[in-house]
Every structure is written in structure tokens, then in C-alpha cells.
Image (cartoon, rainbow, N blue to C red; front, side, top):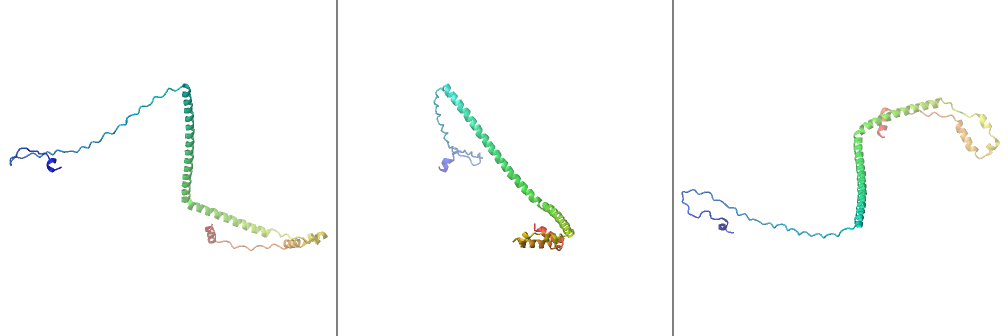
Length: 196
């Protein structure tokens, strides 16, 4: 297209020099693009069905009832599986929440645990001291010579005599009192508790 064809002539007469001309009106030459109308597919004519007999109608009704029953059973089964999965998911989330809470509370639990361990240690010390006192107070039982004399000749001749003699000697020796252990200081107790 050239410039002359694109712009139509507005004035056909010559215009005097002192006359004011109206502004030229531009005409829009819009290019219209025609979109083809969507092709409509011709509708297929349905083939008429033959009339169903009563037996066929009953058979179809039974098949429909069976199909509905099986689909209902499948839907229920899927619903139960979804419910189980949801419960497992909730249980896992609850466990995560519990573990997070447990981590937050851990310092408080350690303080409580330390207190209980201190109490147990104090109780054990008291029990050990009581046991030592009982050992000291308990009389040492020494076998008398009469028990040795009551042995028969048959027992003295047997091979088992040597071990029995050693046992008797061990029993006759007085029990030694174990030396007192040095009590632990608070610092040593705390060191021991850190190792737990």
C-alpha cells in the first residue's frame, strides 16, 4: 500500500489562504480478520433399541442391584482404609508433638531425676551403715570341739575328708570386720551423678 491509498482525500476544492480549516478526520481502516465459525459436527442419529422383554428387564435389574452392592462394599472398604491411614498419621503427629514437649521439659526432668537419685544414695548409705553395725554386733559363731569328735570312723576314712576339713577351718576362723570406707564428699557424689 502506498501513502496515497492509505489516506483518503479530505478536500476536493481549493482552500483560500486565510480560511481556517477544520481538522482532518482520520478514518480508521481496520483490518477485519474473519474467524471461521467452528464447524459443528453433525449429530449422529441414535439407533433405536429393540424393546426389552420382561426377562431381560429382570436380569438387568438384578445386575444393577449386584453392581450397586459391590460398589457400596468397595466404597466402605476404601473409607475404612482412609480412616486407618488418618489415625496412623495422627498417631505419628502426636508422637512428634510428645517428643518435642519432652525435649523442652528435659532440664526439669533432669533436676527431678537428680533429686530422686540423691535421695536413693542417702537411703543406701543409711542401709550400709545399719548393715555394718549389725555385723559388728552379731556374735561370731565358732564350732565347738565336740562337733569334731562326733565324727565317725567311716567319715574320717573317706576321700571327701580334706575338703570338709578346709570348710570347717574356714567356718572356725573369726570373721574379719571390713574396714570402713571413706564417705564420699558432695563433690564426688556430683561427679558420679554426671556419669549417669
